[in-house]
Length: 245
Image 1 (cartoon, one colour):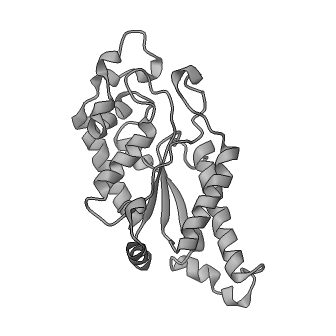
Image 2 (cartoon, rainbow, N blue to C red):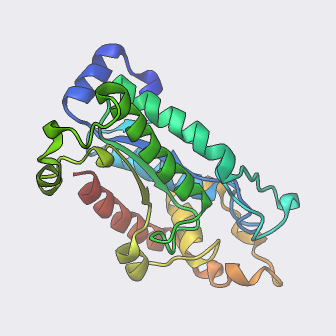
């Protein structure tokens, strides 16, 4: 279900069922001459297009204005960089709004600079911090300051062990975890990302643009196929199904 198309009764039903609410999160960044600027965002949105055919999801409008950086190429390559300092207040307000609606199973999924996700990079760190702050704000607003130290929360740690953790209400995940990376390809506009786009958004790919003298990071892209991309998509879908429960 697309959030912007849902009626209030459908939203109430999704809240009652604890249906996962997913936010496709990405950037607009140079991905060589053969791939679209929105590759990272498209990989997430097109995967969720497929996932919603097999399970109940609430899909939020995608947010592609992350911290792209100009590490790959300057702005003449088309990248739109929005710094993390601007993302945090926006994301906190958005997550807080979703929590106030009543959702408690919110997941942002990103495919940008996620090869070392445990360490974090600007976009995912901004949304992770924002999610934590939104949860703190909601709980303090409902229960008051000192809520955690109140005697009513004496079973807080036992609740965690049983899966009752308010800080799981908002989570941020990479599209590809280490297991998928080990079994597929992780690169920037190379074999892996080109194959994913050939499978998920073939209309956006121009393989003829892979000319000699292309940047080092696109090496191997000429060998990409839609079939290989489908193998990666299957791995991603299997992981997301496990992740979302």
